[in-house]
Image (tube, rainbow, N blue to C red; front, side):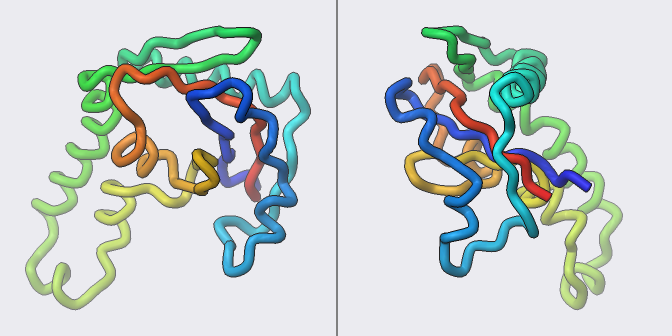
Length: 153
């Protein structure tokens, strides 16, 4: 069963097209998924278009430059992206008791805040969960373009 995709992302078009599935097999200690598979160009474009359509729904700009799809988030688009996750985390926390919070693994709460189990980004030679990229690395208004896509199993 597919777990998600790794999207190669950069501000610079010339930096795209480098990421391949073998990058994840040869990285010592790296185990984000059990298996990886390069996506064919047509498939990758379709998957990327789906991701960017979702971003557009949050208010991000979708771009096309030299045949590459891209995106740019405003501050409001970033907040819109995280709003459902924030509301879910608040809801889970309100239902949780102090005993549960202090003695068990709050997996659902952690996943609502930072989802490591779905799509990811390969950015600036770093592998990041998509949520981390959007929250910590993406600069508002900066244009990012998508290169290769790898399927994670």
